Image (cartoon, rainbow over all chains, first blue to last red; front, side, top):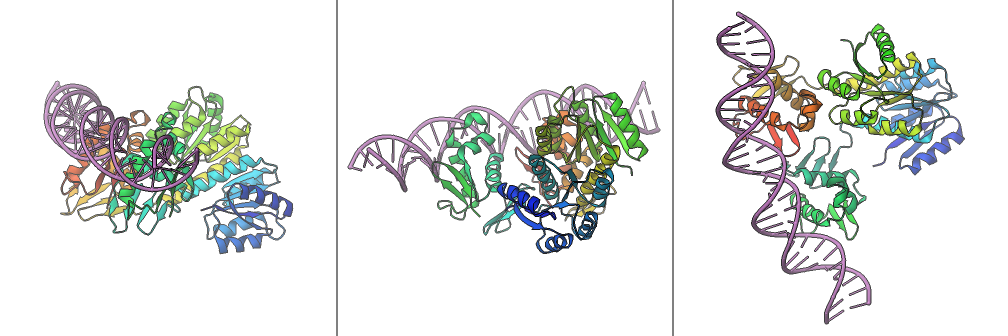
Length: 227
Length: 227
DNA sequence: TGGATCCGTTAGGAATGCGTCAAGATCGGT
DNA sequence: ACCGATCTTGACGCATTCCTAACGGATCCA
């Protein structure tokens, strides 16, 4: 599922530029041009991250932060043209998570966004539990629970494969990537291993191991976790 | 209780300047001049925050971040003279929480430290007393009471292991993390210790030590407290 | 139709990791 | 200096997991 970002800036051009960039990087982008709009959208859609410009027409930027912090812990990254040190400190102490001074480099913004989302995501297993009709996978706890409530025991290798597939669930993961990440780059061509372990995973997880529904083979390319 | 900060920098002058500043602001400061020292102190003292200079003599800064992130979620703020964008991005993607380029203003550093600690502080507190059918564990009082009401005596090491497992109850705790946090990063591979102490804990807590119900082994990966 | 390629399945020996025990070393208090 | 408690270390048997090879089935193409 794509990370949802709310971008708040009164300049429509900047807004558009950032939106295009982020969308190209796989983010789901919402925008707002005023402080009140930002608060409204936040309450309605609960974004995973807020990019906030301080120079808004209706409300002071720090006021927006303070309002948000009354009920939300969403990560907030401030983007501002003001280089004054007190602005930074006020914003951070009001509840902002990070502060970038314009002009900033887009790669740095993206890296700081990843860091902010990573932090907020891990402590309260938000997206770490993937549930299907037949079992649920807890990536943080490294646990698989079958529909009957029993815990399914996986070996380290089985878990490594399942984790890779589930983290990119829906997407095709190439055999080369699986082999490289789990056995090392030297085993790039040992597709044997994958066949054996995928069979074991299916025996443990699929209702009908002979006709897999979740662990799908894409012949000649790789495997895919379908939920 | 004062926030404990570990400051890592190879330049003794900078180290001293930062230490004095932070101490004046009420922080409890520890210092390290090398990457290995930083890892050792982190494992021994569990600081609440790490300030890390990237230019260390023995290890690359990002290597220190990566090692720490194997077992710790302590906030890391990188302080670096390098203005190169790729350094920033690498550090952030490896697990750093923030990145300041030298020279920076001390008020800004302090504000970012407050922000980092604020984020990390709240979400991790859960119940301090965990009860099972056969015993109950009081994490705050560091006490274990058996079903008969008698207190179970645990040695310091036994308690350290049990506490780690119970704080993340249900989740798998890797042997690396256990060894790093209790014996230090250098003992990462001494899985012997875990076997011995888990056996002792089971003898003291499990109704059937030979068939553990609470202290579960996940072969090749780690241990898990199941309640 | 025949061949080639890729995949699923099975099984058994090799390698690894775990539980257990016991003895020596170390530490802390009297 | 002594003693008990705690920690370290090594060795052994056992269970699990991994690797590997072989075989049969499915699909595609000539």
